Amino acid sequence: MTQRQNLAFVEVLLLPPLGFTHCPQIQVLHEGNRIFPEANTCILVLRLPLHSSYEAFKQHMIEGILQAPTFGLA
Image 1: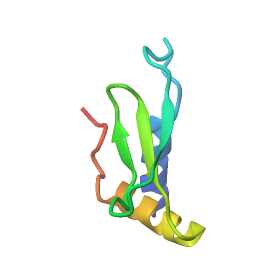
Image 2: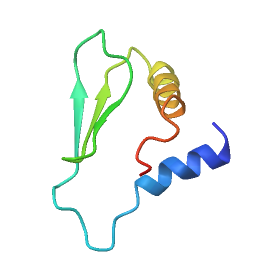
Image 3: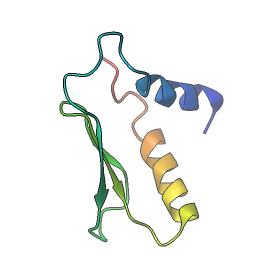
Image 4: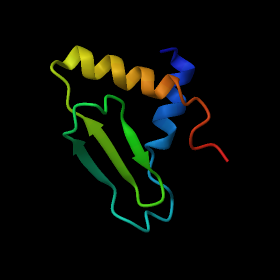
């Protein structure tokens, strides 16, 4: 990932000035056929899949972020 791509992703993680209307959640995906992270921005849920190693998780997380460069931009 480039520094610009990383910063764009991190900007989404900053708290909004008025807070959240829903409490942010992180859920674990136990289904083996789902390898990429998923997000529901309406109810602030980040779903992370299980992988056999940290390296596999990291690679799929990076790929997921890079495949959606304009996600969250309106």
